[in-house]
Image 1 (cartoon, helix red, strand yellow):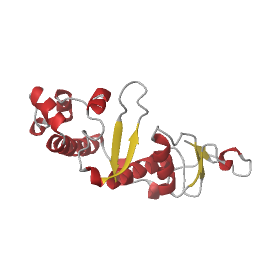
Image 2: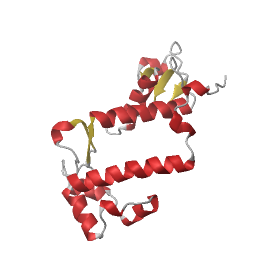
Image 3: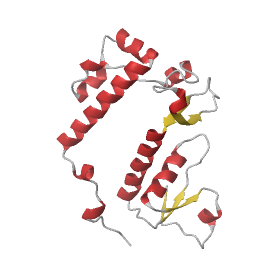
Length: 180
């Protein structure tokens, strides 16, 4: 049975015009670039080498002038050199196994986790998920962080979550209404 979105479950941003979206993207991008520039010495140095400053970010097209963070940057900053907040504000750390070199480490603040859950809840809702659905999270919960994002997003939406390899995901008694 196909479900249809009702006006009540669509957030205002989901009805935004292209100009409104671009404005929000630019505002958030300016904050991110400034925050990273002010708090990550290696990024500030790369900006100086590229002769750009956060004040130079006036349009979305200006982003192409700024250095991008690479996987090698994450390795060079191992373990916490690219954190843009004090390590004590990091509530979750994910790291790769390091099989191709140094592990890459990513830290999340409580706000990051909250933002991630809200984003995934909106994504699941956009794909047809609704509160009360049983959601099977097929992603792993190991080194790949996607499983946790889908899990917390489904919970935020009000769904019941069944993890991969759980009885819920393989039992005909608990048939999921969607899978991530």
